[in-house]
Length: 587
Image 1 (tube, one colour):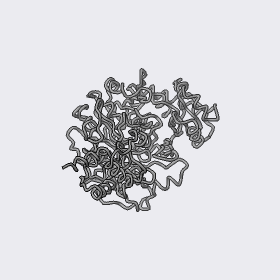
Image 2 (tube, rainbow, N blue to C red; image 1 turned 180 degrees about the horizontal axis):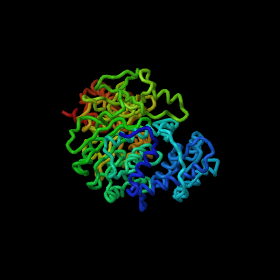
Image 3 (cartoon, one colour; image 1 turned 135 degrees about the vertical axis):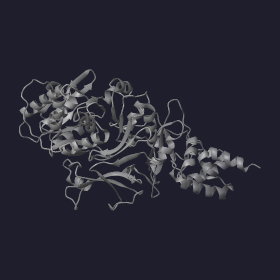
Image 4 (tube, rainbow, N blue to C red; image 1 turned 135 degrees about the horizontal axis):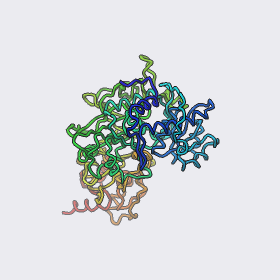
């Protein structure tokens, strides 16, 4: 059993003493043993301690993924300071605000980010180049005692909206989080772990420390500069055994060939699909494992579902897991009462190993981290995610609470709709979102990426969806994209999805005969529009199942024709609908 009464650098030094000649880290054409990495870390430690002046020790990192970033992180922690990694791609004004909020003792930057560092920090004497200081001169190593409950880092997370919030956590909590991963996935000295997450993304914590606190090898890869195309060959030539990424990266990389050395694939940070499981089973060895997990910066790993070649896959969303030691999951309703198994509720995490809170935001911390009157050592973190507990205690993840749409007061199971769309031949990616036109109720929009070399027919997709789902769940608009937008962490960026109206529409063509004018008048009145072109897609204009019901009832009365509900999906324009009505009216 690992002792949690120690700091992260204490645990790292234990590994460095036990495995001085084992590979610790490799990136590009550079590799360091544990002894060499320890020496570089000590060089940074000597610089920071030698110039300390008693100010609060928080050190901002402006670094790309790679060996210097790992050295800087461990050096800061060894000096008893907290590291604060920021995204160098942020606008300078936003970086400056974050620097002012953190009040760092130092900024450590890659050489090419030094001009940026000088632009956001007023004191040039407090800016260090990691490439210049990470050279071991063999001098004495300062004796620094770091308490287990000391602040280890601040990770700023943007969330879905609003001001970035800095999540603070301690050495003890981070060490416990790494222990949870190590226990569940059996990390050992022979493992070779990817480090794909950018330094400013908290997902890097489990990959970096999962390797270096277990005597394993860490393999940083800068996705921004290297891209995804070479990654498959890189994984094979480096004989990677543990791959950790968001599902979007996994899908792109894993389809490029087989990976016999991989024993474990970790998917976190976004929803996985049954297609991910199919790709895993097709391209990884029979004895390998896929771990689909739930975690957050505020709590670390809380659930994990492990899948191998024989694991039966339940219907519905891919589960995110079974129970993890010391992390209790509750599902709460709006009154913060537990919901029955099988019901949807907000995922809440009860533990003694939650993050400390948000940097200088006590009100937000108090609203998200709830005290426990029954046990002061425990707190409950409200994740803002929705889930459902299956029989047997396995958790389903249903997405962010603030992104789950309500259509006419009813929750829509977006995950179920996306699974149906992904089951259509030719669909590579599918995301369902909502939009709310002025003066109208919210409606569903499906964003689709076709398989390479294939075209998608919206009319055929509608019929496919209607065959598997109730009509109220059908999207009103369908948008075909070359690729889904991704954010800096390579998650699907739902906020960057284009509005359906921005994709373009056919030229306006006015009704040409009495029947088209009658149908156009009915649709215009129901949709509240001044005029509709006969080639316009009625669903792209916002038509939904309730509108179809109203139009159908009016057409029965005005035109003496009875059309099935499905007819409107098969003929989504006034011109198509008029042709269908005309054919039925013929003797």
